[in-house]
Image 1 (cartoon, rainbow, N blue to C red):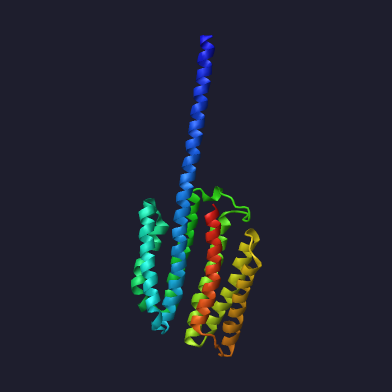
Image 2 (cartoon, rainbow, N blue to C red):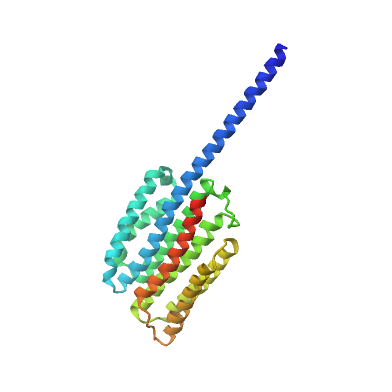
Length: 270
């Protein structure tokens, strides 16, 4: 009887320890994922601001000094956000992608006025691509890929394909705004816009295959695609571009902001 009691006590203790371990393991995973969601939100905000900085700084270089106040505001907000990232995620300091983005931003934010438009756009593109890699890295390391949403086939599509589609629009916003600010378009710039035009179509179609979108979200992108084709690519062939650079920038921003809102709404459901 005593031995039976010992065996049962041992089994009960083992069961309690197993439950305790599993409970804390699940709790630790949830805490890790919650932290990851918070980090991704901050990095996504950085991404949006860097994309705006790319477009506005490029139009500034092209001769529109009136945007400098907006640029200064973006730089202040970006510096605040980057400090917040470090405050809430000290381990990110050892991530080579973060180091690259941080150091690149510190140089570019002080020196963009002395770059050519082409170099300024290239510098931003490189930095933004590293930030996209960083977002994926942070999301994976915090277990976000294990989470599921009913209207998304694979959650990684959200911060990979969806953000890539937004970045295609962001590049087209920057390049198109510069072309319209100048009022003329070289063959090289036209070819670049044709490439970005196709890139938006490609990246959004990929995102749409795995993420449920509304008809309005599709119409927004299709309007932007049509605008690029008619107002920039076709109009540049006869040098008859009439759309204001600021108006085009705002049009692109409205579509991009709408797609960021969809990203934010999905992240909020995790």
